[in-house]
Length: 241
Image (cartoon, rainbow, N blue to C red; front, top):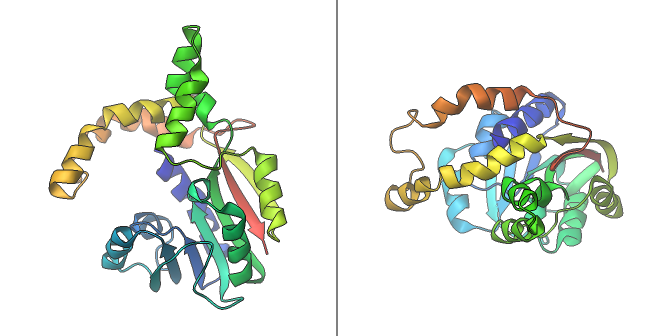
């Protein structure tokens, strides 16, 4: 659900992203394969297993197992950079942003989706506990911890960190509603059996494209198409070096 919204946001900007492009946190390559097909993209990720899977997809011009805080590229190597829901997981954040700025050409674009400070409070578990008179913030902190969210910042705080690294914020738009995030939280429990499928077979779905998510399609479609509010649990930044 969330990735589909992000894929739409990145795909809308694809024509305006000059190549070559650096993907900070390339993962298994699924996202770029869907959102930015045909682009000349180089990916970096610290996880060897994910990088091997990305290489097998054949969607990157090059891949490196590396830390974002020590990018293996000369200065001004890339015309653009992207990062999809990665920066909230990164420590050290400032060093990674500085490295991204270093390898971008002057005037280059950096497009990043990130988790915001409202994320833990808008989760279904936090909302339910608060409604019961309990401390919902404990659930939010737990969820951030198991999600390895080290940086859940407000829009102003994210902007300040980007600017400190040498970027100019061109646009910042929230995405995903509070209601959609609650469904996202619920889906972790609904989809838990897929973890077993993945471990036993190496696949999330036994017989794609057959998936129980097809039953959710009418609801997911409305959430996908719904406009965000004035603020939200995620932010989509377009930056200039």
